[in-house]
Length: 206
Ligand SMILES: N[C@@H](CCC(=O)N[C@@H](CS)C(=O)NCC(=O)O)C(=O)O
Figure (cartoon, rainbow, N blue to C red):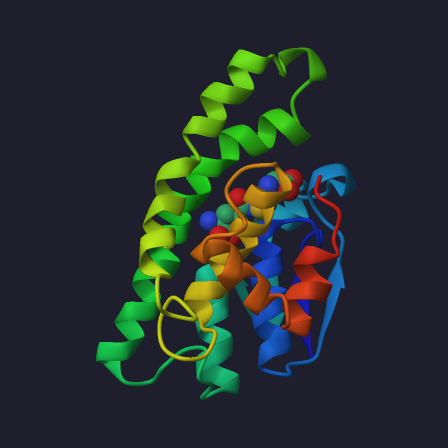
């Protein structure tokens, strides 16, 4: 049984929950971080020096960094089509995982924090528009990529879709984007996935 430390509202925890559900790996989850706190306490920092969530135990093994954890789960509990074994296919999935952490999340986080975390008086129309404009470039890339294809790589969902769809959910929830394009169609297609619905779509943003 995995032990997942991290609030269910964290995008990086959601990646791990969706991946574990995809692989049918049983887990327990404990609320840490955000309004639940505890992530800056010495006992938590001894597990994860970043003071961030998720941190995941698999027996004695302690892991942090959501993408590393998702890869580990597929390696240990797979093989699964979500993480292809052939190197030339695997790298195509992994590039979108790295892109999600290095491009997608940094582009959306400023608007997300303004709308959900920062004091209401900072939410001026100009500031919302400025931060919203910064969210468009990664979705233009996804829109082009998803023309005439069901998923980012291959014919079935992979770890590439998992990390990025969590942010597409936030983008649409923040009133951005055109749901009638290819990104919208991909988001709805993934919405048939029970793990996406339960762990992401049905969880209130905060
Ligand atoms: N690169 C790390 C980032 C982890 C991260 O930024 N976690 C955020 C939540 S998504 C966090 O712990 N924020 C502090 C908090 O929740 O209190 C990963 O992918 O696991």
